[in-house]
Image (cartoon, rainbow, N blue to C red; front, top):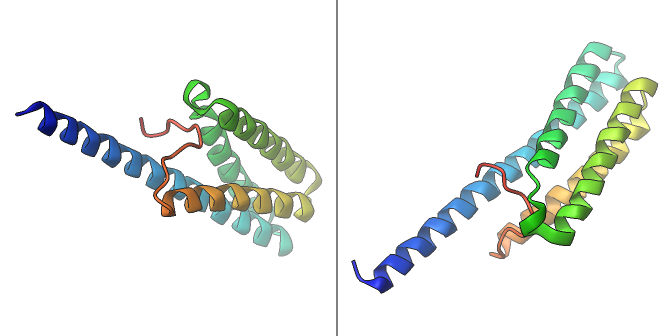
Length: 136
C-alpha cells in the first residue's frame, strides 16, 4: 500500500466514524424530543406514570449527551453545550416537581434548537464540531 493509499484509507475511516457518531447523536436528540413529547402528553391527560417515565428517559438522554462532551476538542462549543445540558436537566427536575407543562415545553424547544443545529451541521457536510465524543 502506498503512502497515498494509506492516507486515503485513513481519511475514509475518519469520515465513516464521524458519520456514525453524527447519526448516533441525531438519534439521541430525536429520542430526547420524542420522550419530552410523550411526557407532555402524559401530563396533559393526567397520566403521571407516563409523564414521569418519559421525563426520566429524556433526562437520561440529556445526561448522556452531557457525559459525552469532549471539552478538549470542543472548546467553547462544548462549554456552551454543557451549560445548556445542565440547564435542561435542572429544568426537567423542576418540571417533575411542579408537574409543569411549561417547563417541559421550554426544555423541548431548547432541545429541538440544539438538535436542529446539529442536524443542519451534518446536512451541510460540515465536520461534527459540537464537541461530542459519543460512540467513540
